[in-house]
Length: 207
Ligand SMILES: Nc1nc2c(c(=O)[nH]1)N(C=O)[C@@H](CNc1ccc(C(=O)N[C@@H](CCC(=O)O)C(=O)O)cc1)CN2
Ligand SMILES: Nc1ncnc2c1ncn2[C@@H]1O[C@H](COP(=O)(O)OP(=O)(O)OP(=O)(O)O)[C@@H](O)[C@H]1O
Image 1 (cartoon, rainbow, N blue to C red):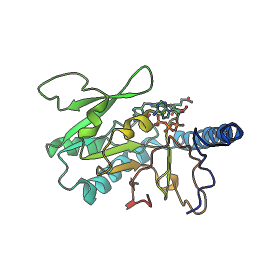
Image 2 (tube, rainbow, N blue to C red):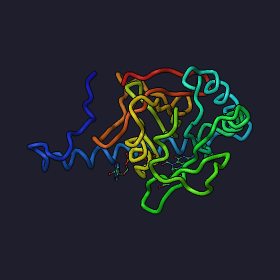
Image 3 (cartoon, rainbow, N blue to C red):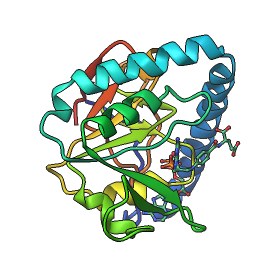
């Protein structure tokens, strides 16, 4: 699959000439984030509650979760497809849930819910102990590219996740883009996600 938006990283012989490309990719990411945030602000409270329930239904029914004992996830923020029902159901099923704690440098520490024998943050590498990692995104394309909030937090966290552990992003249906038609802009540091969950379906991505 062509990836015209993927820019080669440091070490390339034409590194300097790529700087404007990097700036252009970052500008395209910013514009896309602005568009998605604007659309997300328009979601009504009743719709958000229905989406929260629908996400739980899709996520908990999908084979990604089968057998998982520890899941890294997140508590949804306003506008994001809700994760509250799914988190409550995971706890009801006695699945351990790791939740992110944003560090001052943008990296992510992790807390266990319910708390384990040791309370408090477990360290940035705790995400490696999950059987499944559920990540927020503003958009995802079918090649697995993910557009996040722009802090680079999950790019760092996902580097620590073993390759065998599936990473699944949660987006609204219209935020899942066809990579052949509208590929998301991406840079070398961007980590791909393996699957996506929307309020209506889940699917593996071409990674
Ligand atoms: N639910 C959730 N938790 C998360 C993330 C996330 O994207 N979603 N993160 C992902 O890394 C980390 C926290 N980073 C975040 C960074 C920015 C925003 C945010 O709400 N940004 C504003 C826009 C700010 C701006 O314009 O610059 C917004 O969305 O309106 C949220 C989380 C860890 N926890
Ligand atoms: N491994 C890393 N270490 C330090 N900084 C990084 C790392 N990966 C990415 N960054 C930086 O984070 C910034 C934002 O990256 P990017 O636009 O990909 O964020 P994002 O994936 O959309 O956000 P998030 O993961 O927080 O939701 C970039 O300036 C990038 O250089």
